[in-house]
Image (cartoon, rainbow, N blue to C red; front, side, top):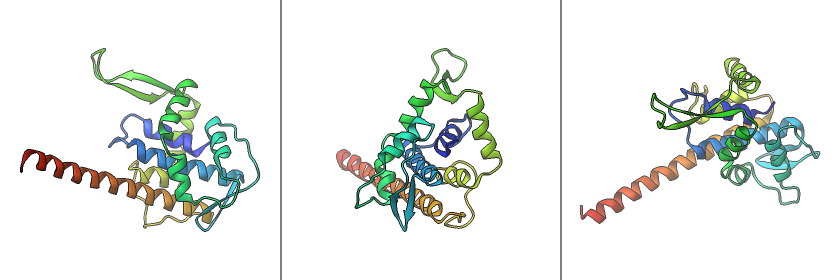
Length: 201
């Protein structure tokens, strides 16, 4: 079981509106991977620093790659640095891997054969497990999903978990997603100002 894989499947489910941005999802997936590595003992969190633990080889190949990507020589990286480094194009990586494994399928939307193509999970064990965790409101999965706009908003600014490291990671994902949104808004404003200047407004 990987939280990151389950989170990706939930994000791909038809009817998840508004659509989750690839950047937001990639950051959340990187956070989910870090939480899975924490639970496996492959890393620990000291304040906001990711400290390598015992070497681990998770069953899921993308999580195994995440374990290989952990910085094992000091100075270790912060959770924030991990999210931005590991999260780069991570959603696309999960999509490609799950398609290759036959756990995602491409379908045409609408009634016409040339309608827009969408990707959705295949009805199988992985999809059912992710749905069960979501229906059971598993705390970590629920918190990460809510950060990227899936499901209800978490109660309070910072959800608490049994493990302080998990709390730190979820909080860092929230902050990173907010930072990404601020960058988007700034670019929108700058582009609008440039367009107005170009038009002579």
